[in-house]
Length: 111
Length: 116
Image (tube, rainbow over all chains, first blue to last red; front, side, top):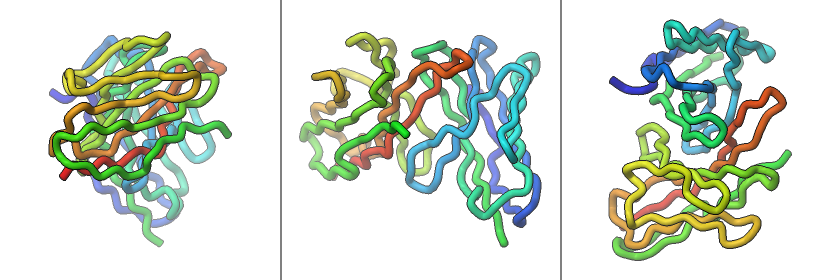
């Protein structure tokens, strides 16, 4: 079983749509959780850290359920510029710990 | 806004040659990392570095790989004798604390290594 699993995608949505990405992780010792976005052949860029009760940043809302080992990302009012691959990322090791990446879910927002 | 920088952006080398990939982490960060991404695959951890020594390394990071912080700003990854399967994008990252006490990792733009 993969340590971090995501919806395979791709997700093709019209501008203005709401889209949700799901992610599960297998190691209950995981300590911190993140969503990164990656544009084609570019570096992962931190989108949101996912705090224990969930958090919101503008159009983006992240939720964490430690009991179910489940993380989600909701994007409201999607823009063309949101088109990218969204990476669910888990850190097991605390402050200097390595990041474990999911395979990523590709999002394509169409006019 | 501070950022991680990497050089070169693209390196082409022949099998068996040594390469050194260079990174300048964010200046007040204390933890440094190398990751790689083979085309079409997920990002994989290679090594983490703190207080001038390796904190953790993956199975990929064998004796052909080494890291160094030769001065106060640079962080390097050396591959001693490159193989075809080392062809990948190599990302450097660094981390420091946020206001909430989390440690967030920020990535450089990557070096695309092509081994022929």
